[in-house]
Length: 354
Ligand SMILES: NC(=O)c1ccc[n+]([C@@H]2O[C@H](COP(=O)([O-])OP(=O)(O)OC[C@H]3O[C@@H](n4cnc5c(N)ncnc54)[C@H](O)[C@@H]3O)[C@@H](O)[C@H]2O)c1
Ligand SMILES: [Zn+2]
Image 1 (cartoon, rainbow, N blue to C red):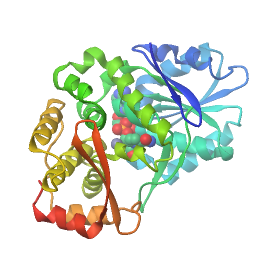
Image 2 (image 1 turned 90 degrees about the vertical axis):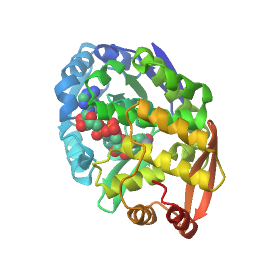
Image 3 (image 1 turned 120 degrees about the vertical axis):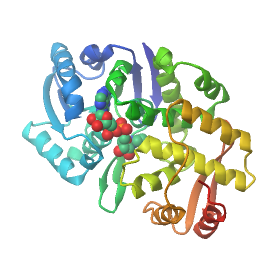
């Protein structure tokens, strides 16, 4: 088993082992007392059909009382409506501060269940059992939780660290190829912002053969960043490499381009802008495109640049007229650059970067 210990405001372990899902109950009993706490499992219908029985069985064998809430899969469920249903479920099942929530699923389940945990009874403990590659290497670690509202994605949220993360990479075998690729985009992002050695590995290896090591490596990069800047005021922003333009593409396409696919295109576009600004060289872009293609990810945006500009400028999270861009000048070397939105617009329009 691989263990990464995160020393944030809460200290917790991320446990990674192929096949460990059937033992998740006993692994959890090391942290929560089965005699004193109920496990309130929250998941979506797809994950429930595949893994809920195994997880419930394992928790019950470990001595926990269990209650379950299942909602329809997909980004649309990361909503206020479903959140209110989760609160009702917790109240109906008499879940109290001595109990805990289990987020079983991808980033949607993790964000929604995590936000419910952050806010129900002014905050109860929770754990993550990520079942997508993206959730395993990114969203289940670091404590960002959120729901979407009509004005925008992730606008209502809280920082709330889990007490434990249990990851069984065997669950990735049932993912749709494009959902697995979404996680690959975040994996490539980690390599670009952090490590030449890791990028070289991704350019050559068969990741399925070393999936535990890859998950642990990515989680450890996130750990180092989150430990320095839990609240996203400084270095944590480099995790947004490719995300400003990626989010814009997700929004324009109404999420038919999923998160990882948007980030892949976003990394390409921001690198093209970096070349225009003299911040990096063409070979870096060639390498980025080649590795994205190796993991079946897109490298071009086929929409209108004007839509891209509109979408970036209407980002509700932006502070005033300044947009913060993350550039990679060399693999592992990042710069956070505040830029006036007028300059950003000019730059994007200057040379159709697609
Ligand atoms: N909190 C953070 O730090 C953070 C970071 C990155 C992304 N996110 C959020 O994560 C969400 C995206 O997460 P995601 O890509 O995991 O999407 P997701 O949770 O919607 O999962 C994608 C699809 O895969 C299905 N699925 C999950 N596990 C499966 C499995 N093992 N086998 C088969 N199907 C499975 C789900 O039911 C869903 O239909 C977004 O809402 C994004 O905002 C949060
Ligand atoms: Zn992301």
